[in-house]
Length: 535
Image (cartoon, rainbow, N blue to C red; front, side, top):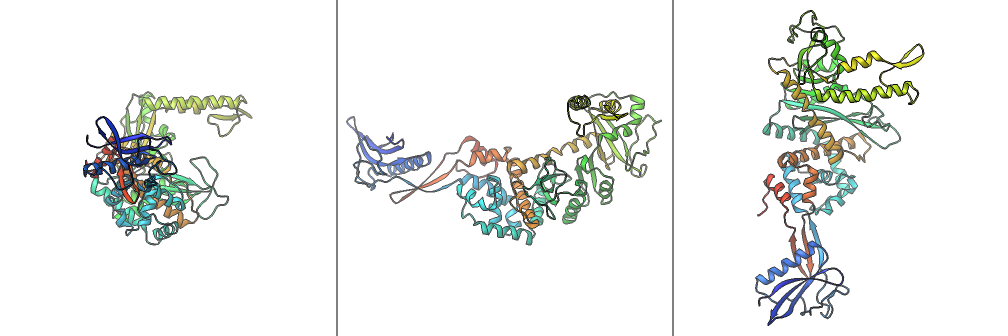
């Protein structure tokens, strides 16, 4: 009978791989190839055995034949004369993960943008795989077999080049080119977040300010400009005590100047709604859609309430105007029809669109009920008053602000949007849908904070922090590319590809390489990225 391969569990728990043959019903061990202690070693030994069988070689020059009771003792098989040693792992490499990251990085033009700086590429890759300190980056890359991981000093030198050579600007240029060449750019989304530092003292950048995470640590403000899909275009960094409203104009103007943009729609939330911001965007010939504060609703909808009351139907849209400054409106409430905004006809107003949603109304009602209950608890002395809504003081006593509560309940379900885009160019429904794409920038922030955290930040100088954020922006771009191309989150991609390794072992001077088989999910990812698998 032709020789075949057999796997046998040894007394130590390893798996022995043997070449065996049967002669007249008697099994004979032709060769003991070695013992594997994990799946990778086993795959390599099985590959070696198959190669020898296919080559017609029944006996290998690895030592004498063993009996059926072969086992390891001190790395040797009993009775073998000490010729067969335990396989030694030479290298492990998550080749498919490395290939996926390098493919995205190259296709986005990031390597060219930074002049082929391999240390910068490695920092981006490590940020995707396991966000940690720059000093720990070589360990992260070594674990997946990244070729020639840079020393930490080389990484710090790359951070210095990042600032000196303007990597952020060149990367932004590459990302802009990618967007314009693929999906086109007609609308940008903007939002800000804060990154805190566990530092005792402030400096000229890390300052205590309003924190979205309700912390009192020194922080910086980070602004992110993305396209309508959430793909990053530009990142900005400001002092932690800077007003959020003052960040949008610098980043938009810089983006506009860098790419010669004349026509663009900027979408931002109500936090950016200031008269100065809207005027500046309008004077720059840029279109905008920003969220309106609900407190503006009674004035903007005064005529509607007068003629139609405060009852709304699900999905109802009211296209009207809102004062650019203060509360003086150009609307005549004696007229039933809502005015059609025009910059020449209404120089003191912007266009406003108000939308009603039953789903939002239910959510707002639950929130108001919780706030009312807290207010009543504060008035009853059951809870400490701390900026509690709907609590006012009357003749020295704390009482429920019934009027404010009633006004708030009359506005549940309403959401407003302010824009300088005439209705002939963009319908009310399109204004609403464009604004709702802001969830993409929020998702990008969540991705930058959770999937590839901008924190921890192990830097304290202004230049180092800005260089770090450049790495984060590049990593976010790679993550977005991978996610958009495959339809799978970057976390899942890493989880699917990282375990698939090429393992090289040394067996008595023979270097053997074996690869984990592709899983269906891995095959799907690589196919979507147009990476040949050989299958």
